[in-house]
Each structure stands twice: as structure tokens, then as C-alpha cells.
Image 1 (spheres, one colour):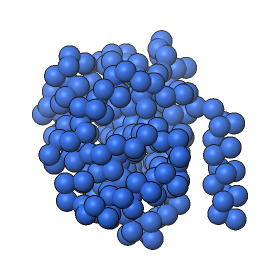
Image 2: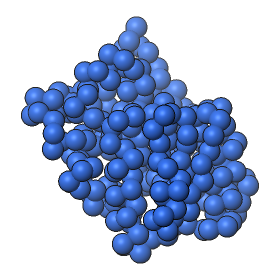
Image 3: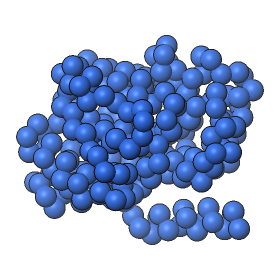
Image 4: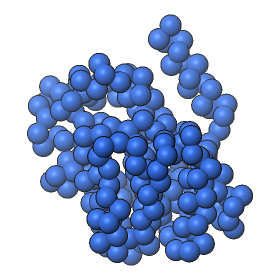
Length: 223
């Protein structure tokens, strides 16, 4: 079962992007489930998701990659046994840590007869609010960018060329290995490419040594 996480902060256009990506994947014939995590004021509405013919499971109680990792793994196991989706789209909270979510997903292998495969970790970065985000939650922004495989500069239809360039530089500085692409959740730009990534590419499984090395580099740089 392939797990695809699409990260980004509240207001980054993540919810709109998730639904458009899911619609496109369904058009391509994939069986999809969505796991949503309700820790913020704005979130994917489970009833709205179900109206699209999808399996929705809301998780309450905190960030899916820390406080309730056990519940997240149980959710994946139950989805596998009851619905058996090809792809599970995870719309984590804006404070979720991508590598921690990978580890939590892999816990589910002990609870069901399945092997977890990870799609590339996608992080949406809102080019219209990049200065505000860096000032308000720099550490979390850096973590979501640093642990991404692909960063989509989102809202390129309304952002200025200066803000788009500034966002791209920020991503390169924080994560030189990340692929950078453009997206507009409103116009649909980048949606099909995101689906191509989810379909055809894989991201490494959780590795504690890799996570420790990322943290070491981050803290050394900040120190």
C-alpha cells in the first residue's frame, strides 16, 4: 500500500490541492483512501471527502506523527483490511513532521498483512505568504521543506515574480536536494505532475540515522 503525504501549512492551498490530486488519481483508475488529521481550525471535511466516493477517516487527538502514531498505524491497518486502497493520501496537520509520519505509517505493517511504500513527500509552500511563515514558524517551515522530496511553490497564479523567486531560493537554501516545481491549486497547474510523482516514484523508508543527520545539519547551521 502506497502512502502519499502532502504537507503544508494552513492556508497554503493544501486542501484544494489534495482534492484535485485525488480526483485526477481516481480518473486514472486508482483506488484511493484519505486520512485527515483534525488539529487545526481548517481541515478537509470528512463528509466532503465522502461525497467524492472516497473512504474518509478522521483522526482526533493531536499530530498524527507524534502523540497518536499508534492510532495512525491502526487506521492504516484498518483501511487496508476493510478497503484495500492502492494509495492512501495523508493530509497531515501543518505541524506534522514528514519523517516522523513515515515511521508511524510503517508501524502499521505489524498490524496487517501489508508492506508500506512511500510516495515522494510533497510539501506545498505558499509563495504569497513566505515572509510571514518564516517569521512566525521558521523551524516548522524548515522541517517540512528539509524533509520533502519535492516542493511545490504554490499560488503562482497570484504571487509576484519576486515572491516566487524568493520562495525558490528559500527552498534551495533549506533543502538543496529537493526538486522544485510550480503549482496553482486554483488553476490546476502542477496537479497532473504531482499525480505522476505519486504514481511512479518512491521515497526511502524511515531511517533514524538519516533523520539524525538532517537534525545535526540543521542545528549546527542554526548554532
